[in-house]
Length: 447
Image 1 (cartoon, one colour):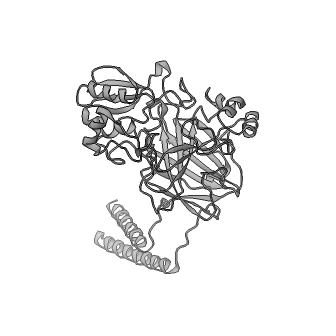
Image 2 (cartoon, rainbow, N blue to C red):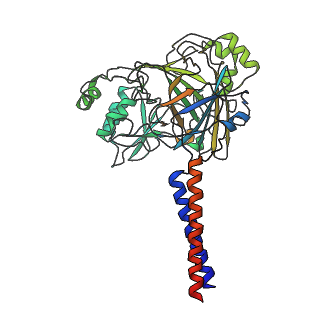
Image 3 (tube, one colour):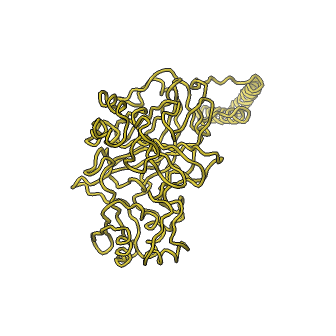
């Protein structure tokens, strides 16, 4: 019995040695993440009703992108982390194209559940920033100076918390860079689930269109009014920290060049939710500068779609309408309805698919060419947690996306080189001889 146990031990050790020696010459391959996103050429079309179920997605490799809070010392020079910023840890992205259209598939976790509508505007409710002081009572004196300067009203919740009614633009820069020095910190956006006061879920892709190589900043969109001056007492307070009462680059995120942003907004650009009805109403669309022909065609067969935004150093602009959210960059050229989206929420995850022609459909939008590589960035908002507009989860840097002219790679079968196979066979023979000699020695001693 002891002899059998010793023999089994010897054989096991010998096999481990053989595998180790073999691995030295022929390492076992491990799955490697690609250096960037690759859009492979596929055959097929999108299924808007069930995004991600198209057969070609099974062959396309995924790219896992880590997301970070955009309102944090990691991304902008502020002194603290905003509690509600950066609630989505990652997004999984796949890309493909079929000769005419490009498909971008995004999937991310959202434990709060889907948020399709808010109680106010088509983009969700009015953005009511929630402010607080983590170190003690709020500085009501500074809060009063700041809100009165921007013609806003504030409401006290308790000694440490208050919310400001109305959109925070253009005070976002003040909230980030000045107010914390005076005991007023930006917490996030006011959410009251019992009153249905929350925000839509959102996802956006930024396509860089500048000439700078590897631009360093992305998705940090600032306020809607660039280079504005703040006078009076607030301006004097700002000079202590900014050196001037003029705030540069508050209307755009980019230090160089420009970018096209594709944005999906649940309930507004997705058929589920009351806000979507605004965009299917032809009269409303025409009143807001959207091309009448495109609106009529869309109203006859409504589907999810994306909004094009244009951003540079001077501002953030709407493309293809009369200026619904931001100042208008173009007229009706022909409106929103040339790029589709499909969205579904299931098992705690959002799955959203963007579909757009490769050729730029409107001015100020990116033109995509097979064989070329583009810098892209991503942003995700969880509406029910209070992430919206300025407050979001973003990719910390641009990621290269290549529109490959090849089909998705087929699973490869590894062939062991003859030299490696020879070494392995010799090693096995030596191991067998060694085991035989040891076994023979043990049997002789046992006698």
